[in-house]
Figure 1: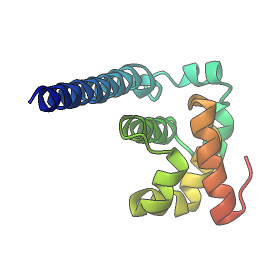
Figure 2 (figure 1 turned 45 degrees about the vertical axis):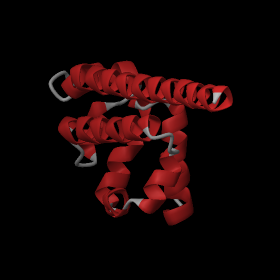
Figure 3 (figure 1 turned 30 degrees about the vertical axis):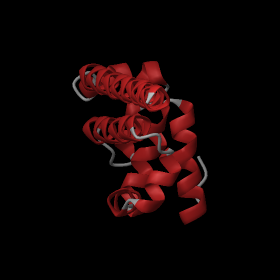
Length: 141
């Protein structure tokens, strides 16, 4: 009986630790998304701020790309990153199984916008998307 109690206690402890880690990961992901929405979400309203990230908004405009398109793609990728982080999934691995992301990146205009938006994305995330675009379309950034 004592052994059974010990096993149940150990299982309960392990479950508690796993639940804590999961909740913590979810909270961190939520805070990351809220931060992204409050900062990067305003980039379209402050197009001059793109220069801080190394984006020449005038060059983008010359290619038919708007500040809102860049800001939208940044937010979309940040939401993807939050989802992947919360679920312990790699960005590249998620894209190759997501028809939504595949259709999005199949658009030539999205590929152009990505050339600019990628500067506002953490490098590890940007490299995963660059990898997908290279493998799928032979594009290099």
